Image (tube, rainbow, N blue to C red; front, side, top):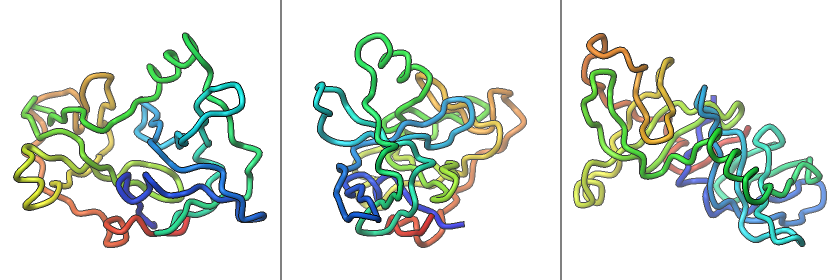
Length: 185
């Protein structure tokens, strides 16, 4: 399993591997709220109608330190405007800055990064910070994104919402390739 991170992918160009054409630059992810999978990459710029563009994660052919590659440039879609965009964003969450609590309700910090499987898009770890200066000195603290994690509208709850069963979460560093954003999918 190759691992990539949000901080390693945001800012990379999305390039069609067949033509070498740059389709845009990754600005953010869309995450499936029920299961914690990256399902789309939000790209910079707008289409000819002025709508933001999204690229389905399943059409990603590879993620490296210099680019996200695809062989399916035609998969690039405009994000619907107005009410449909709000519905899309309500179902699929943006994660950065959200608070994280464990199954007992203990605060773990706010999300500053996520690590995910570069092939499937499954989020495997959450990078949290509980203070600007600590993050600056030590970097994010990595928590495993275990089965039962709730990817909520206002918070992420580790290991589900059934308090008391889960001990305090120990740090879990993602694979070494995650820190560089490298990996082939």
